[in-house]
Length: 71
Image (tube, rainbow, N blue to C red; front, side, top):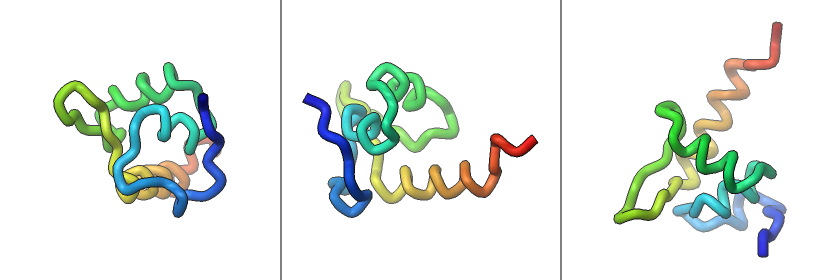
């Protein structure tokens, strides 16, 4: 059921949680947990959680800039 994302360009402009999970190579459960973090660019449309692709890319860039694994 889960299709591995090969390129960010292949993704639609608005991503579902399943698509976010695939793009980030994480579980759907982890993607839902991430979506509930204040710093993550998720939004509700009705009862669905949607993530704009451009905001996801910006969020990733911000995380890389912070280099959270550097000690």
